[in-house]
Length: 126
Image (cartoon, rainbow, N blue to C red; front, side):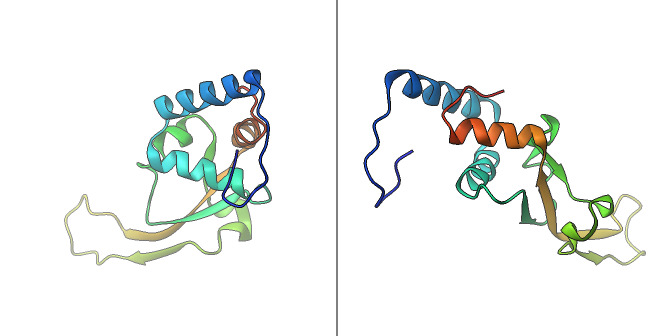
């Protein structure tokens, strides 16, 4: 809640208790990268989309499973125009993917917006 160069803020005991409880829940439920993605949205309230390198689904698994994020797709329209993939040759093993995703879009859902809002406003997580 306090950033370098910002003015001092008073945090009452009830708010501090909620902040600490939220941090414990987030640390227990989500990995480091997932918490960084949430922090990105906390710091940038106008954003609902983040592009990450490659296919980060495995690193964002808990956020995706909880419905906090969803992977961008064609149904989201031009919002995911930055998706970059490279096709692989067809002469590889059967289990080789058709393409490698170099950059993918992840969208903050309504559930995610509630999470981010609760973190930002020092309210209990939904």
